[in-house]
Structure formats: structure tokens, C-alpha cells
Image 1 (tube, rainbow, N blue to C red):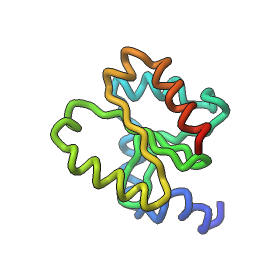
Image 2: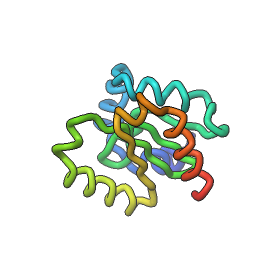
Image 3: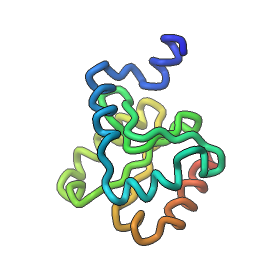
Image 4: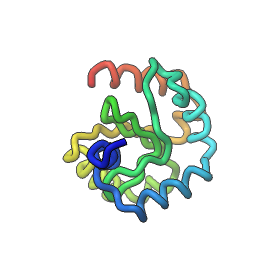
Length: 125
């Protein structure tokens, strides 16, 4: 991979952020594991998703570079950081990346609906 392609894929993420993402890949929440089992190996409409992917100063739960789509799976902590999440989403949008959020409960209770929503969004991108 050329340096330019590498930078485009990670939006200039630092080595520190890339290392943190690598460390995070060793950890899974239950909901992330459920969703990853549907996204991995191009199972969802042939799209390539990456897990714990660094983008600039952020680490996305899941990222599809082809569609410039971040998927976040939000636990209870996100109830207390809505302002931060809005700012983070705005910054990612400014990079040309769309952000789609689901709660842990949505993923755990209705993974088929979550996958359908992801596909509908991807069809529009």
C-alpha cells in the first residue's frame, strides 16, 4: 500500500492512535461481537468493514472505506456524553465520513433490523 493510500485509509491517524486501535481489537463488547459476526468477511452485501479502525484522532467501532461509513455501537456511557458524540460525528462528517449509530440493545435484540438499516444507508452512499 502506498503512503498516500495508507493516509487516505486512516485520514492521517497518528501511530499512537493506530496502536490504540490495534489494542482495542483484542476487546469486544457483546453487541460489537454480534454485529462483527454479520459484517466480517464481506458478509453484508460484499462490503469490507474494518473493526476498531483509526480515523484522524478517532477510533471507529466499524468502518467501510468504500462507502465512507462509520458504524458505532453505543453502550450506556453514551447517555452521558451526547455532546461529545455530536462533536465527534460532526468532525467525521467534515472528513466526508457518514456516522451511523446503534445502541447495544438494538444490536442485541434486533440484529436483522440493524443489518437492514446499514444496507439501506449503504445503498444511498
